[in-house]
Amino acid sequence: QVQLVESGGGLVEAGGSLRLSCAVSGRTFSRDDMGWFRQAPGKEREFVASISWRTVRLYKSDSAKGRFAISRDNAKNAAYLEINSLKPEDTAVYYCAAKYGPGSGDGRRPDSYTYWGQGTQVVVSS
Image (tube, rainbow, N blue to C red; front, side, top):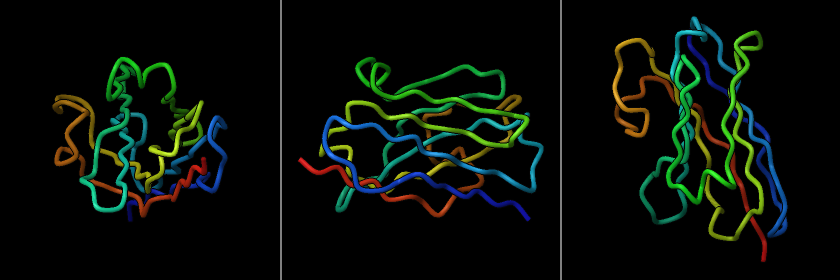
């Protein structure tokens, strides 16, 4: 059974940092592309960052590249998203997702991912 479990969310003041974790089980993690998405109340789920099985990183924008850092640890079957200089508009439920990497498409498309976690809430106070 495949499971993705996010952790590390919480309430943080603007300007602070968080490190979200995604623990993956039931899959050969080293061959998976991993993505982080977020969904704010009343908004569509949006892409934040992805890291391919070959550790190619994509971010939602060039400016996001400076505040978000995605990483993975294949030995721990885990992916991470570090968010710095948090802003109130970063408030959302953050989801990690996994898909088989070799030959797969763009990591920015949510519909390309097969497995999803339950999400972890991030609330940034001003």
